[in-house]
Structures are given as structure tokens and as C-alpha cells.
Length: 119
Image 1 (tube, one colour):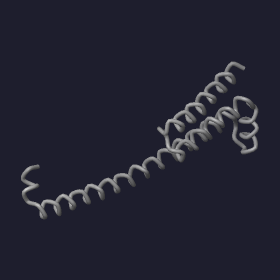
Image 2 (cartoon, rainbow, N blue to C red):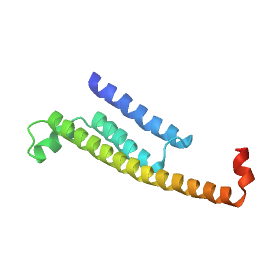
Image 3 (cartoon, rainbow, N blue to C red):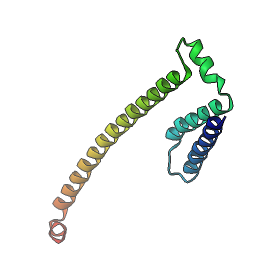
Image 4 (cartoon, rainbow, N blue to C red):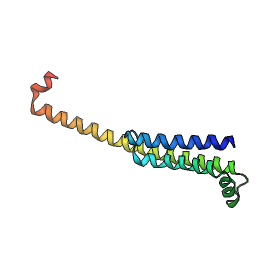
């Protein structure tokens, strides 16, 4: 019973934290959705503890904790792949912006050579 209370409190804290980060605009909605779903899943398992074992049996998995570990690992892999994709996309965008700034500086220097000497 104590584990369920800890799970319930952890789920409430996770959902509350995501809502607060969203409210302060420190977390984008597209990322918060995933974490709110994780927190909601924690709340659901805390309120209905037999759900994990029922789902494991329905999927022919030996025990509920095995299913939970598999799902948690899968979620972490998906998050890592998504974040790697985002970093790659942002690197490309940053490189393009740096090249654009360089070209604009070159153009500005060609238009006013005395401004280039002052900088």
C-alpha cells in the first residue's frame, strides 16, 4: 500500500511540475505532452495497481514489472532519438544562420570600408 501512495504522490508532482513549467513558458507544449502522459500513467498505476499485471498477462509477459521496465526503456529510447533529431536540426539551422551573418558582414564591409576599420 505504501508503494501506491509514493507512486500517487510522484505522479501528482510530475504532472504538477509539467503544468507549472508550461505556465512559466519554460517548456514547450510538444515536450510537455509526453511528460504529462508519463505522469498520468504513474497516477493511473497508483490508483489501479492491478492494471499493470492485467496488461502484462494480456500481452503474455511474465510479470508486471517486466512490462513496466520494457515500456520505460522504450519511452527513454524514443525521447533520446527525438532529442537527437532536434539537436541535428538545430545544428543545421545554426550553421545556416552563421553563414548568413558572415555573408551580411562581408556585404556590409564592402559597402563601407571605413566601418570595417572601426570594428
